[in-house]
Amino acid sequence: MSADSAETGLPLAGLVIVDLSQFLSGPYASLRLMDLGARVIKIERPDGGDLSRRLYLSDTEIGGDSTLFHAINRNKQSLALDLKDPADLDALKTLIGKADVLIQNFRPGVIQRLGLGYDAVREINPRLVYASITGYGDEGPWVKRPGQDLLAQARSGVMWLNGDEGQGPVPLGLSIADMLAGANIAQGILAALVRRGVTGKGSHVETSLLEALIDFQFELLTTHLNDGRRLPRRAAFRNANAYLSAPYGVYPTRDGFLAVAMTPIAKLADLMGVEELAPYRDDPRTWFTARDEIKAILAQHIARETTDHWLSVLEPADIWCAKVLQWPELLESEGFKALDMLQTVEREDDVHILTTRCPIRVDGARPPVSRAAPLVGEQSDAIRREFGL
Image 1 (cartoon, rainbow, N blue to C red):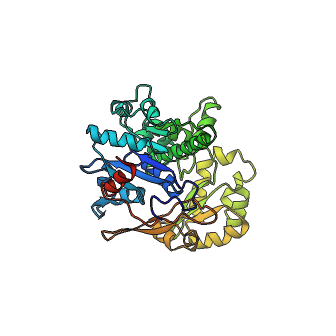
Image 2 (cartoon, rainbow, N blue to C red):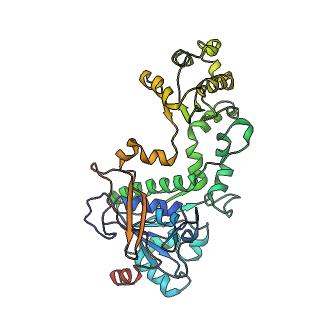
Image 3 (cartoon, helix red, strand yellow):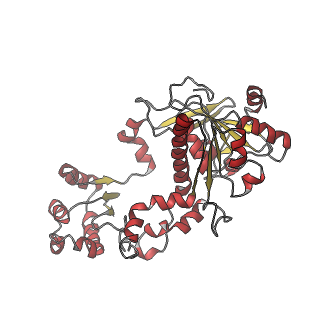
């Protein structure tokens, strides 16, 4: 699929996204909009481009850029502009005047100093949907703090839901704040585009890393707010959810790990032959008050047999359980293969990247994307000609 095709049959075909964002949150939003058919023009500094080009998750580099950059910027176009250069800034304003969406994740105040805040841009293009992502909103004492994923996790409380009770705070092992904020702003953009279709007017949609993480915790945080503000107590043994009772957790088997979700203790005891669970069979209150004791009994019993043995016992009885897979086993599994979630994207300079595909299917098919992330300014000349910049 060519990046500028308006005839893809995808829901957002024909829309032009001007993406001023860097790193993960904004580019993740534009990635999802691109997957759904939009054309994404990524604005990058001529001297190095998006900083995530050099943000390495490992020592692997492909075509001069990090795998992270490739993963989140496939099939986008790159326009190199120096926003401190008045001529380039004017060129950007001309492009914005012809665009449908603008995405930016500068720290609060930076975009205004560039003369590209929402009020200024609305004068250029009243139909524009303008999307802003910050670390902590645009008010309050944290506004000028770095909006970085780990730091947002630290301030959000989410670290106290992971790990066991005695471990202290445990961060999630991926950039969850960035991904959630990107997903949230994409939802806001889509809603604003729908409203524009009705009213003809643009909108300013906003979110932040912290707001995304607060929303992510809405189930557990709502319980805390309406339960005398008691703090949740993580299980001291095999914690998987601070508010759920035994047996909810992950248990070592003789050759791996088994995840067990919500299950009546009596049923589990009978199926697995765990006589030591007799004192807890018929009183569901103990499944929480004696959560650690029950889990310890189960763990000792489960460790005696293989994962496949327990699956053969539990799955036919409709017990909610699953083998815990590492990536190699996941990638070779028939369940994963059936989803067809991998693709190879390519670029003319012999860059080939095996990466994931869009998680959304439209009319039964995943969006077809074949081009790798662009070089810095790769499409600059063509975009300038097309839009008269």
